[in-house]
Amino acid sequence: MTSNAQDTRDDYDLDAFITDVGVVVATGGGERHVTEEVAARLRRLLAAGLRLPGELTVPRAERYVMRPLHVDPDGAFSVACAVWDVGQSTPVHGHETWGVVGIHSGVEREVDYVKPVTADEPLAVRGEADWGPGEVTVCCTTDDDVHQVECGSDVPCVGIHVYGADIGTLPRRSYEPETGRQSWFVSTWG
Figure 1 (cartoon, one colour):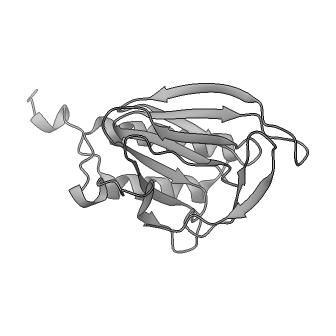
Figure 2 (cartoon, rainbow, N blue to C red):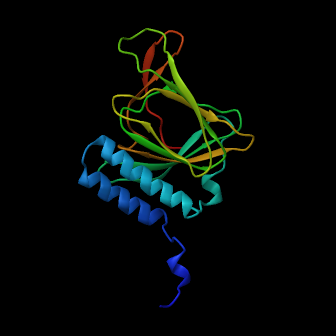
Figure 3 (spheres, rainbow, N blue to C red):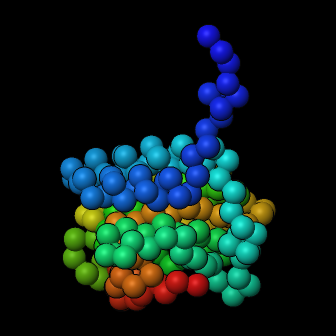
């Protein structure tokens, strides 16, 4: 029996991850199954030491940014590099699709809200979580999908976000937590 250095090293990279996500999405099996499978592959990608070009991880001064790493030609899924500088946050928002998030560096703080059943009612906080490097979560599903995200560390937060649509063109809802007032927006790629 011979020993091979590659037996212990995982060369799983972004291209392999994107290919795998495409297969998972095409195979289907329900949203829960798809998100579990994507989450498992995202954990593997982060554990393998995903290297991102420096220009993708630079925060913007004025607001957080979502940079596309891959957008499926049919719009079936997208993979983004999301970057928040210290002190930056999103509005309270939904995605209108499933999503899986893994943290590359920094800390992402999430405040999760109960999705309102009627318009114009204050939002109730369901919970809060801090996600650190290597951690992966299913951030949203089609039916349960309201949160706010911010940089929770003293260094910029860089996350890999995978969505069940082209998130840079998908109309989504934002919410005013105090009133529940909803409005629609599209978060274009940055």
